[in-house]
Length: 129
Length: 307
Image (tube, rainbow over all chains, first blue to last red; front, top):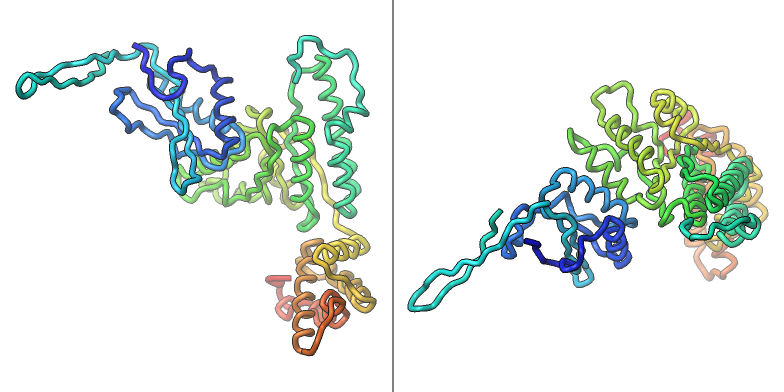
């Protein structure tokens, strides 16, 4: 099941050239770029692992792409997302976030219903391989 | 650049020279830098080579990116950093680097203090330099043969790898004293083979240093009077023979101290001053320098600490 979160997730996967162009855009706006990865794409899992520190003060997308290559080599079967942070308001705000790598076999998200007080129900999502 | 379907059949090098902005950079170089004739010559040759190479690529005659890594050797204060900055601009105009910024580092920025610290540090610097020029000042400090556990070796290995694999992405310029750089290169043959352009920076002559002093003062809105000019010439002659002479940098320091003395002189004289008095450096501001008494006291016995 194709996981859709962040920008571009309803589009076909971005090629490396397209990712490079996106990074160029981020850097042109003086945003910091960071890479994060996880094997748990549950929508409520907001804590992805950081791949190194966020990258500040870069001038060219190649620096980010090198880190991305390394991350993809180390975790070929993980979800990797790229994020851009804007600091104009005095704290870092996520401006962009998109998935740049997915496992070949994506887990399924299934919905579960649980009975609750009275006749009300609760819903939850589980990721299954 | 070359993916147009119809490759051009001929290229006007002269027009290319003007339109790429190379002419402008070389003109700036000529105007802003005094002396350094051999350096300017080498840069002009390099620019010609790159221009021709670019034309060849546009015509589909060659595909490879030429090796552009350079080494600048010369004594301190001979303008290596300034020229490196110009070089970054030149390579940017010619399209050999994408952004054209200069990242200037020394050993401290590349080498870490404990195991596992060096690689991330070096990589961080390299990431920042991508698309531009990485200028490594006093590069020979990276290699310390007397300490085999020195982390400099790790930085060298990463550098070599990037210099080889990312030739499209960044240009590395290593700078330092000529003799020490020679030793550094002979101990690390990998660098020698990866650096195509070795440019030597000669020392300035007395006359050139005099003109540099004039330009520096002019930029700050000062001028020398007759006595001051004579004193400065004498100062330069004497200073050259004393240890730790750093060419233009020594001159800049000398002028900074002359300004200090001038300010003191005016302040102590008191009364009303006019613009002319405020911007004139005279003999009295230069003569008290220790250079005229044979250098620092400590220096006559042992090498001095500061100029």
